[in-house]
Length: 449
Image 1 (cartoon, rainbow, N blue to C red):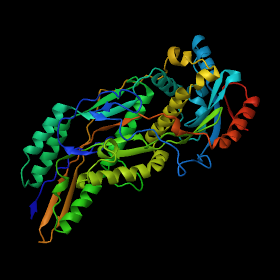
Image 2 (tube, one colour):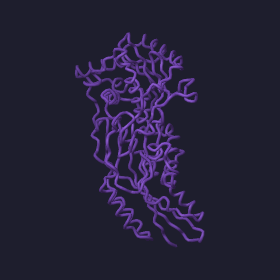
Image 3 (cartoon, helix red, strand yellow):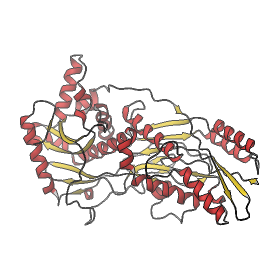
């Protein structure tokens, strides 16, 4: 019996791509919506503006679960301002946007100097918060970089990991393998928390980091989503098949994979009428760095990149299911939809056309939740032993120690081609429902009629 040591290092969970182990560039903020860099990676390619085609043009509006509710931005600002001026606590309906989680669109009401947001209230799906709305309004209206986060290995710790790998025994004993794992964990150290585009301590920043960290655990098999095989499990299966077939499994050694949470290519897409906009498509996607940044140009993937793409594709396909079972993923979905609609509102100048004064939310509203963001989070190290009987009947044992880092980018384009006016008739019943319901409502929010 003999033992072979396999180290597929660094499976990063927000930006996935395969590269030799090296010190990453320091994160920098994107320069504008849909462009810029994160961790030295261009954010421009792969997020170009979309255009409707016969395949993407909607014939019906997407069916989301839950009760459709409408909320007045004018009343929201007024009620929050009045409560704060009187030094009263804000109502739960004000703080939680009447329980709305997934936003669907907005309606301009120039006659009331108002814009109405509408979306679904569907407990236990988490609700958006007034803090989220104010944070993203300020991000969009002031031209800040699109919100992003990353959890990064410290450059000095990455060098330590490289040193541990370089010093590993060629054919270690079981005791040496256990010692190697401990050294890897010590060398990895904590992951640095990087936030851009929004205040570091705001709810939106925590939502991005929480989803990112959950994704890392999923890639290592420390959390589970039905129908999704972890990156670690895929590596193990690759080894089993290679050894059983008499092939080399070394193609997954010493690589650095990065995964990105980002908006789907060519999205978001909207249906637009003269007085309403509906978000018809806003997909959260996980891609490898090669897939996203080098779209249409990447070479044929190696073994590790192929495994990474499989994980990314499978998780993307099951994201809706994952969000139904995880508040971390659901909150991230809420924020992408919120950001998409606010960017559309700003792009079209809807607030100005409606005569809505956003001054209070943009400059005077103090966010009510301010949780200190830690500087670091504990590093995550995968640890899996794979034993396979080779064709010569020798028992071949590999130990897997993937490390994880990564992030989220909310960069998204905005162009005329993303707004479809040929389907505007689909919005007429929504507008009628909103205005009929408002006629019977008093105050902040209401259910359509």
